[in-house]
Length: 411
Image (cartoon, helix red, strand yellow):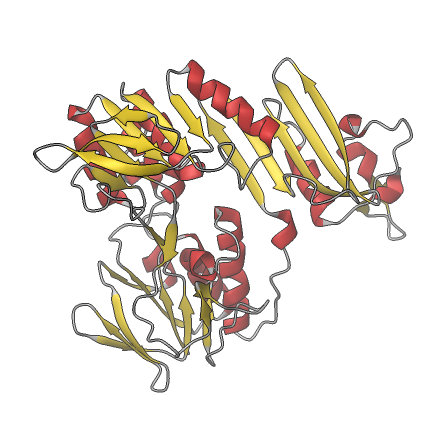
């Protein structure tokens, strides 16, 4: 069986490894535009100098050889013929498949704002080439503006702060990290960045970029009238899937590739995972999707049912946070317990006694425990009514076979 995987990111690599494990006779080919396998979550550490390009790899050097996987690196897929089950590559060659996984990831986009798009000192942060360009510009720049206060934006901002630049972050939402955290947890990062010397501008957007005589952006005008001088701009406010090779109408697509819970697309024998699906743009979810796709590609039925336990772990400027499940209660049918003292913030969200979401900031002990509780949809019935004192010990008991079992029955 010939398995072809487009993309060597979290979803693609996890799928390649799983296929090799499940089908010992598999012929696996991975195609990637990148010439290295690396964690995009760690790119900012290369900019700051904490890591090198080599030390952000998340696979062993012999990953492909050890598993007999063919890696076509530095090549892009330019066309797909689903009838013939054949891909065309950027070098003019073609690759056939029996099963195909599209895990090509996403690319950053620069907002189409007058004076910003197309400027030579406006950068994105998605790959090692972006890191090289940003690092080179940062050596000469004094002031930088980051567009977007999400994970990528704050990663970029923290790296540029470490490089000694004067940094400002512009976020359209009313807080930073709006998709990952609630307002209280986000406030912790806003205060941390301000303490580090950064400017944080929330609830505003960029309306225009002011160009200098050389055509570079020298200042950004915001919707509230603020003008931010700058020597460089990092756009981290939006991404789009890498699916240019797909012809219109060949596969169900609504901004991202549509998949079912087995990661199958509308095209027979074609699967998708990771950013191209839009299910969840975080690393653990991409890994899980890749594994689910691999299982079903090899005839081992498995469903992706873990939407609810999406987990974010954030560590910026010395402040650690873990968010599992829902970051905020969707409506009044949910109840919330909060602990806030000396910079430590903890929040637990319940619905009918079942834990639906947890945020832990500064003190992230027991995050693994809460992940397990949410994943298992455990119902808490606490003797003293204090959920912040619960530990693993409260949830383990011995079943009828004499084995330890995780479950609320231990209470």
